Length: 183
Image (cartoon, rainbow, N blue to C red; front, side, top):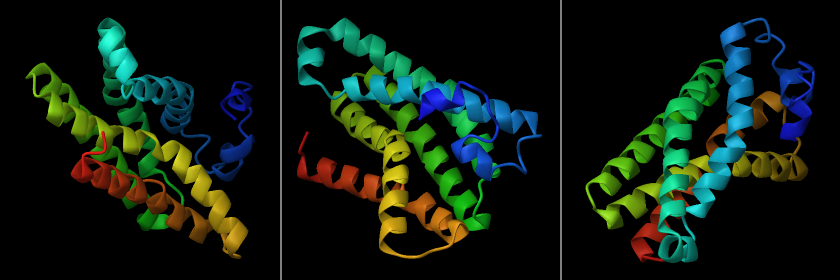
């Protein structure tokens, strides 16, 4: 899906639904930057949960962790926030994406700070929360497919529901994992 955006065709997939924003250069640039860097964020974050990498390749763990933190805080958070402001689905969607983005920034910051302080238990917990929000890129699309397959719903209503379903269940699962100490 990401490869399709490399054509910079402003009528491809998601962009076909965003024609009212295409002329807003800051939105369009934020969109492309967000899309093209998200894959690195997903991959870098995923590596952080490998016990093997953590034990046998600490330098790799640290390097990928830094890549993840910098990608979220310096690239994905700002671009995601711009996209959140222009989200479809009226204020419910905008609010969902602003909350998602703000929590993503907060949890990632806290994960970085607690690692620097040597509090690795808190670091791990904040990384679980942060990555749950990173993974919302996947769950959002999954819920869209599931919901539209189960019920007939307008695209606007689907987007408003999907905006929340993309990250709230992820956070609930993250909290369950943390509370049950399943990491």
